[in-house]
Image (cartoon, rainbow, N blue to C red; front, side):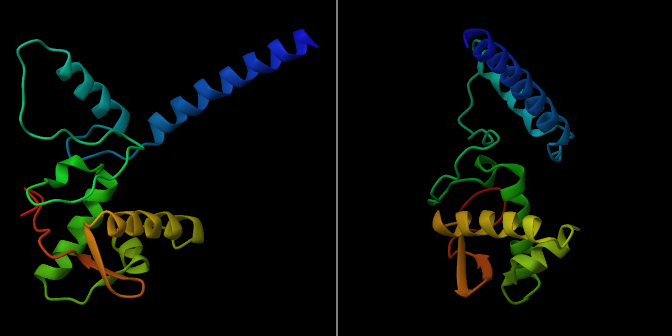
Length: 155
C-alpha cells in the first residue's frame, strides 16, 4: 500500500510539472512580447534588485485577484486579459457605441464562439463588474464604470 501511494504521489508531481509547463507555453503574450509567466519572473527579478524602487504599481501576476477599483488606480495592476477587456470597452465609449456584450467582446478578440471561451470572458467581465471597474447598464451589457478612464490611470 505504501509503495502504491508513493508511486501515485510521484505520478501526481509529474503531472503538476507538465501542467505548469503547458500553461507557460500557452499563456497569452502581452504588448512587450512576454508571456504571463515570463513577465512575472521579470517582475520578481526586478523586485530583488537592491536600490531599485518604484512607486508605480506592478502588473498583477497570473491567476491573481482583481483589485477593487479606486480613483488613481492604473490599469497596469490588472493582468493583460483584463486590460484587453477594458481597452475594448473604452474604445466603444470613445466611438460613441452602446455598451458591449461578452459575445461582442469575444468576436472583437477573434475568439471562437464556443460556450467555454465565451463563458470565460463573461466571467472576467463579471469579476471586473464586481470590483468596480465596469458597469452593467443592462443585463449582459458592459461599459466602463463612472470614473474609470484610459489605461494610464483610473481617474
